[in-house]
Length: 208
Image 1 (cartoon, rainbow, N blue to C red):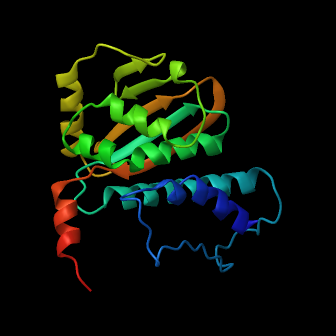
Image 2: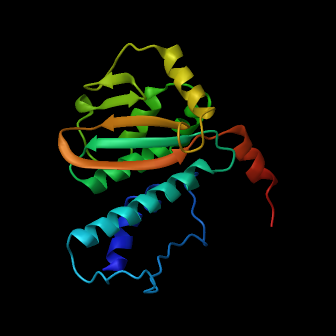
């Protein structure tokens, strides 16, 4: 039961993090139980099991966000929320693709509210959806509806990203991107970070 809880929590947290698209041979997740909590053992499904899993998931999500925020040279956290997909797995795949797009990440670092790069990343995620239902929002700025670009305050949207870069760690330092791809019930979230000059500098100078 604990293993199943952890696997589900990982799917909603660590498996939804992307910094640069690469992975580490050292990436691992372990959750240990030692019987020392002085509470009755949870051995079957029910309210207590659901409460425990919810708390476990919340902890994993916070740690996952910290991993993305701590990416080399990152200036802000990027959260991509996808709704309207046919299922949760499809929504999570689109969210990861957008969050991991080098062009999206570069645009965020440049404080460029570039809906085209977000739309392009969603479209190449390998998930079928009707482009005429695509809706894209950056923070409070609605940039696309029904697959058509909308007029919005570009300067204010850019300032929104600047403020996130100056925000408090994991409190007000998040650039939120909301993407709706249809009318399905599938939803998912992914976290990443912007791609800065320092990322290239840090990794170019790195050696073993």
